[in-house]
Length: 165
Image 1 (cartoon, one colour):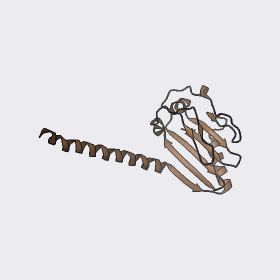
Image 2: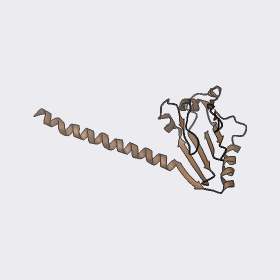
Image 3: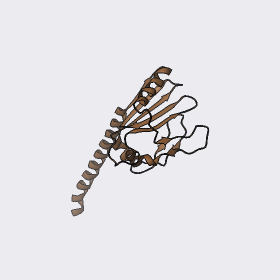
Image 4: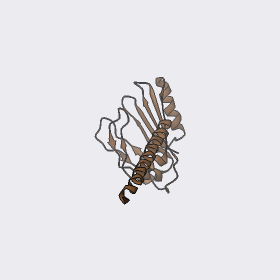
């Protein structure tokens, strides 16, 4: 008899947890989808957007330098630049230019989303760029502070630009 009183309570807790879980996942998908924009530009328009973004960071050394696409080299992370306290970054900006398709992809993520991943190393795979596992964590990027994180151009003209504010 006493066991039957607990069944509705357990079922109610399970349903509540499922509703909250679905709400959190749906909310996260909504937030991410609002931060991504894809636009079609002329060949010169894509390059102009990159030059405009880089103009405000003139003279900055990238925190991460990727090897040439045809080499087996490793990515270089300039950890000597990670000297600040954490918490100074609010937004991670990413631009990907694919000239073959004349597509410019804008991604502007709140940095707290990067912090949710914990201290796991970042995997980079953007379009035709080869997949690299970088030995850099969101905390190291945060300690680097606002500025240029990555600027890479492939031999085929694809570009990848990452910076923080």
